[in-house]
Length: 369
View 1 (cartoon, rainbow, N blue to C red):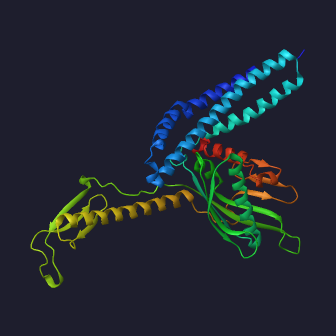
View 2 (view 1 turned 135 degrees about the horizontal axis):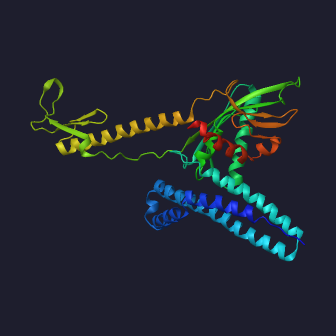
View 3 (view 1 turned 180 degrees about the vertical axis):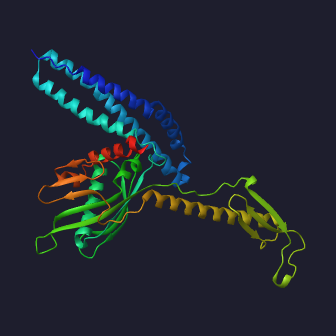
């Protein structure tokens, strides 16, 4: 008589899952969803399309996170029923189905556990990926296009929306570069481990000598940063001085103190305005200019932060983080984590979760602390 006993395995999975559920904070996510749904229902929301898109995107991300957790919880419940039925019916086929589902759940919960490691400052944001061909001529531009397709297929497998922002095609094969946005929960934290130099080794399809060719491509990943539409300037951050306007050669333009000089104390930016007829008008004009200057400064700082997050990637020898071998041994190997797959075709078709999860765990390894 069949006696399928995997209760200890299921209990171990439940313990891990309960810890994950606590970290993910499903109740907190549900509260956020309720708030965002109220905002999304506001008929005036779409009067500001950019803000509306942020609200709907945040709502979609949080609902997806909840669905992912709830789906795993339901599968755990269903697995216990499958085991019970298999034993009652003495059905080996049903038992095998339960064992297969157990293995699948172990992977799903492991993937979910990895996501709890994504706690960096920008990890929860969407991601912008840029792929650039490096050394290797036509092979390199062809490789860059292969990598682009690989990441687009990965996003498609997960149901993540992608927006291709720019593509520069090579004169021969493939692309010189491409930039695309992946709009998904924790897309930056997930994909940031893919940043670096990727190396391809194969028999070149572009040469006549059937020689092995090595080529390189660089992958850059940055978070989608929120752009400030306006800058709030506290009164305590400015000093306002008034003085009389003057024209060329010292000629008096106004006999009252209508000119305004505003000093932004935190940055030292000084804006003077005397073209308007009244002090109120000059102050308002000076504040508008100050807001613009501060907005530009903020964007420069954001750009610098993006550059810092992207890092320096040379796309050449000595810098590679992953190698793709398409001859002889047929292997894809990550040089940081040691994770490898013996079927490059599946990897290039978007089967990247093993590499990504290994990368996230590698990044969080105790030796980094």
